[in-house]
Image 1: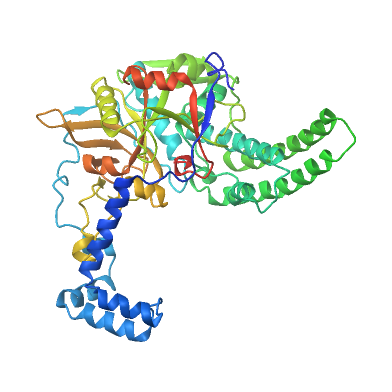
Image 2 (image 1 turned 45 degrees about the vertical axis):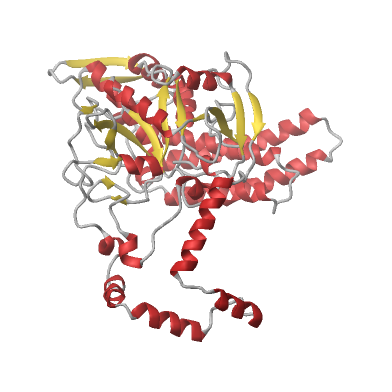
Length: 511
């Protein structure tokens, strides 16, 4: 464990079933949907009997196609839909004429100060979690030092995260050498050894070990803003290394030499591999500052006063920022699993020996209660969601009522949040920052203000509006501290009594 968890009680673990059993109430709901479908399609008992007698369990025949097509196009509306959909984007056609929130892109009765300035842009990379966390950090820096604009280097964290993930991957390969290469776990590792994504606790691991630097100290490179080719090189090197390490570890297991000697030999080989990865990262991302390397931060405050500070990356994080990231933890809303329990995900981390991924599962009202308290106290919140669903980038609107699938296709997407997680339809795909909320007369949230990392030319100058209905369906995670969370929830977090989700669980998705 890292130093940030070493003083806590030793964690305990309980495995969680990979496929949670569906509740009776959910079975009933599915049966009702099926009955509704049978009624809609007018499938009679006689027709079902005819299919059973003929043994025709595959309806995909030319006769069926002709019948279905004839029935579909007998409705003039479907003729119109055919012409529209074949020549245009589906969402352009089924978009509602005007969302009730389209004019409320900057209308909130509670907003966090010091958001934006600047709106950042991750470009063609999967670094949203790094941008979301540094956007939280920068708001504290701006407030503390009276700055109009300030940005933290995302490339600095990106560099060391890549290096640490490579080490974590290679260690998993060594430890699992005795598993067949076509086993589910080894294939899971090899399918994507590392990627750009991450989680809040991975940020904690990075800043605790490496600190932070201002953007000008280590600006983006081409490969940090367009990371696909760099990832291609590293992932294929890691697959190459995996085969070598598996062979060495297998040979060592059958060796007459002592365990310590053979392991030391393997780790020496691993070190040489990590050096090669370090060289690739340095040549593509730049010569990264070292955690204890000195630099000078020079800046003008908003009053025009010049300041100069000598520090290090660790000093910048610990002293200048003064934000205790390890005091913040993740609340999730996962309706598959029990609420008010602590979860982690097997084999998920970036820093070997770092703090575990920690999720306290809570009901939606708790998430919202925490967020409202944070915003009212002028504190932004890191959150994770499935951003690709019902999200319109140009307008910056996330609204489940934006598009009408029923109008276009005579059918709706009848699958709820729990079912989307069970069937692989939904998971955390993007991290952003919540910076505002609009409450109605009863204090209930109507919409949320979101700072994104897709640049200032989308949404409302880089800010998005998230309706509360969208929040219910597609928000999975909110990061907070004990200051804002209910005591019962904090106690669950501090217990370290982990329920372990399998490595392939959707809650292991990296935003």
